[in-house]
Length: 319
Image (tube, rainbow, N blue to C red; front, top):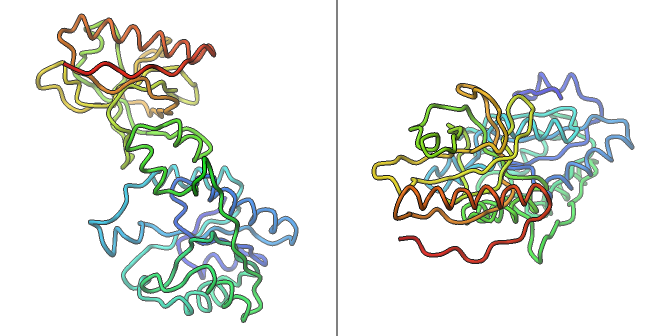
């Protein structure tokens, strides 16, 4: 995939481009349906497949207090788009000046005149232009006037509701990582580097890798079955998120206990994939009680990976 941040430079590389436009945060199953349409049409026409997105998210510029926490880092987003098969990616720097561009001028000047697109496909809830004045219907109409083929891609629904980035954010914030996985079409992932922690896990007999995550959105405090990825190797793990309330003065941490022996991890890049929620984070009467619970958590994680997983009953109240 070739990545550009300005239209004139990109234009020279394009051949009869088939495009889509949007934020594509998380590249969830709804986004994937749009990308699949672009790829199918580009193959059928022999044109370039093109995805146009923005950085940062428009609300981070226009109304930072209302800006959502992103489902993916910039690196993750670009990697997901590349893995989907897109040939050309245009990342337009989102500025106040770009926000002032009316919807019609964006279509005529950027898509038609600037990029020379031949076809455009967007989701039904697509909005664009100054004050979000444009929608998918307007895009289709304007493109039709310019001889550009354009259409809305049908909504993707899951468990009775529309798949959307906001729905996935709510699921992750509630600790519903299984639902998030279904909506994304893959596990939700935190990434970053392994840093030195407070060594509490090691002292209890369960050493952990502490993640300094670059992601804006972290699942709800709790204990999760996870996969930890180091240098492409996937390790089964149990991940705890929270302030570790059993210990006075403990700081917030995202820490993963590997079910195998990965070796020295400090300073290495780590990816944590969230598969299932085991329980909320609890405060225990003693370190011994915590150790007993961690052993149970680890056994249930092993059951998950061996195919003997059963959802847990409601967790007991903390003390």
